[in-house]
Length: 103
Image (cartoon, rainbow, N blue to C red; front, top):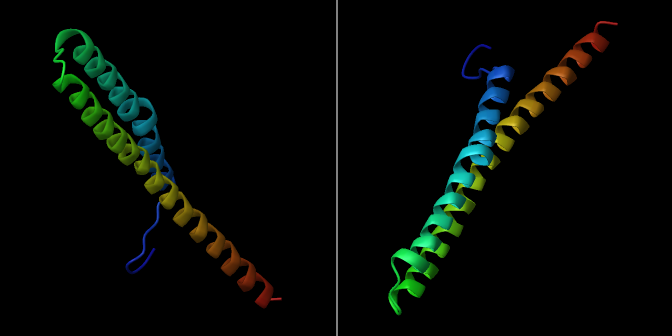
């Protein structure tokens, strides 16, 4: 495309898929594993009567926020796909109008 707009539909789909897969297959599962490890540590390997419960609460809060942030990555994939869909629709509309004006 000319000017300041360029779209590669396959690349948009590829990158969107990478984002989705990264969240679903790597980031969130690894954070879940890390959370389990921390929980085990704070109940078996680093047990302090006053500090361990506070550390557990802080880590759980941190883990929740980070997991939410990682899941938000998928919203970028959705936005990229919506942009692609909008341009595909606009292109089809223009083609239809051009075709009907020539008749």
